[in-house]
Length: 305
Image 1 (spheres, one colour):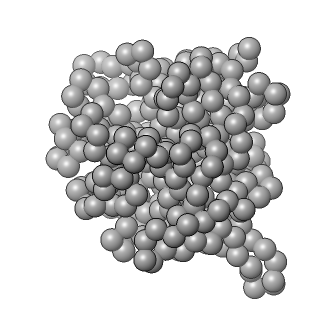
Image 2 (cartoon, one colour; image 1 turned 135 degrees about the horizontal axis):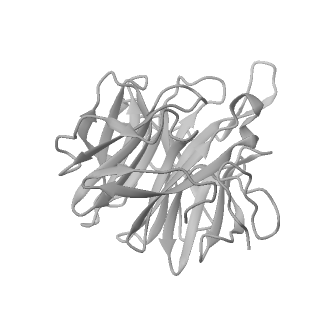
């Protein structure tokens, strides 16, 4: 069994490096399914599963350049690769994958941040679905929700079955929250615009004791910075002023998601490789503790799962 250390490479049950960056976890049928970015070869999104969050089984690369496409909206870009000016094939970027199971359609629905692989001008979200959590996905293309930018993103499923998509918008200056349609396949309406001009990214939302919490980071590229938290009584209501979370670099990490588990809340984050290379990125996992309504983390060399 793996001894998982923060800031070190993690390996799956076959001894291969885990590529699940900017990811998300979904608990279904006794397993935790971990989705994340994999930029090796022609891959985009990998899936792992675990019963104990100590040993992870690689289930496959569920989104690649060869994933079947199926149009859904009238105006979507279905391309998963393109040809550059020199006639060479170029991958797009699919970042920060988040997944939910939709009880209405009985589908697994994956949302990601899409960019064209050349620059960050597209600022779209993209969707894929499957009947299974770890295979058989169809890619339904990328789009701008209501014409807005959508970069670093997350999904949140509330207790009443309503799902929300949150993403950095307006060139990352604001953070927008949209309510999703019943099938989780589209944005239904914009319900909140947060922290205008604050340039927040890497949002992660969770709910505790009826309160909604959001973690986020400032926009500093690959470099870590002081994390922040905020709390609200409702998704579409007023959120508190941003307050510090972790130390001045959030212990060298950026939020990916928060996993509720056995009454605890686990902070999953990336420690990006940056100048040494994207594929050198690692993970930081810490238990979130609370002082009243204030969430905080304390650093540990061992992943606190």
